[in-house]
Length: 243
Length: 185
Ligand code: SF4
Ligand code: SF4
View 1 (cartoon, chains in turn purple, blue):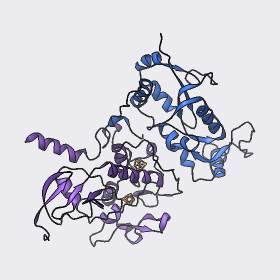
View 2 (view 1 turned 180 degrees about the vertical axis):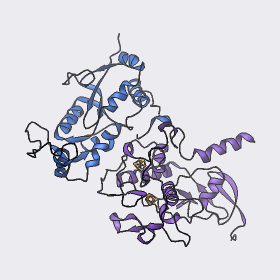
View 3 (view 1 turned 60 degrees about the vertical axis):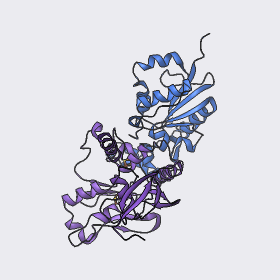
View 4 (view 1 turned 45 degrees about the horizontal axis):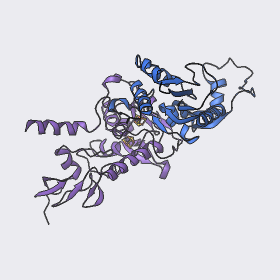
């Protein structure tokens, strides 16, 4: 058995790579310019494996790349037709599970969920739309929460914290009523800068800042011309080109 | 011998006509399209009733009332291929924002309570002419009412997407889907 941090060899999509054992597979892939789609993962924050978008095959078993530390001899496949379809299905579920009316969403064009759907070229979900009854909560003076668009990824809860490590956001209610809330005892500390960070970390249009919006012209939005993930892959091109 | 033209019909159900506008946005390519296509029932030429069986039916908009359902079923009966064009047809779109709001609340808001009507409807009359189509309990994507063969998303769908789809269907070639033309807004 290799100890954490020792140099190991793994195979990703038939090619051998060197890495250090214990590093999360998603990070190894990213360092080597291999794009594995994610939604709930944030670099540098403890992974949660919630959305399952990053599911890959490790020695023939499906595992989430964000929570799997690499070890010697692992054989990983990141993009088989089955995996492609599995990820597509997960995205389609997210679209029918909430109310995603992109034409009226402020995040449209800059939304990670939508961008993944674009990358997978989802034309229509295979599942029926559920049209759940959800609320929009604009009580906070700086932020609007639109529960129609929240995918419950917990990115806000896991990253937006005060100096003592207390989260500004939390889940409340249970089951299909589960929703994001702003921690009551901290809401007075939620300033503009924190609000902006929350909006930025949210992969969807579930958290929006008040008093501003549609700041980026349509043709300049993040995912207008280049698919999500191409920032990782395009580096691969230039690295290969340099050699 | 002249090649038989493809017969296309179009309809706008609960939509804003933006998808039809986008169809016209194919600019000068409409000339080459006219060589390949004849339009049957469509708001573009104002033909009200089907006069022959069509190859392609293009549906903009979702089903929000009984008339929409009737029109959509007519299209299914009279078209070999049916396409859902745009977000409303595919997932309900903006009209579907009323899903989840009780129908009475929607109507009262529109005719009694909203700022633009408040005070202008003193007798509090709600539309009640039997000629009017009945609103459905919610807005339905087209493929929940009839079988739909192809889906072209966008709000509106990019003209290039519409053109690429029509070209592929007419010529039998594979459809080109470059990244830039499949969008949801
Ligand atoms: S959050 Fe993203 S996917 Fe949902 S409506 Fe907004 S842009 Fe569309
Ligand atoms: S509000 Fe945004 S970041 Fe928070 S759980 Fe919902 S989708 Fe994720």
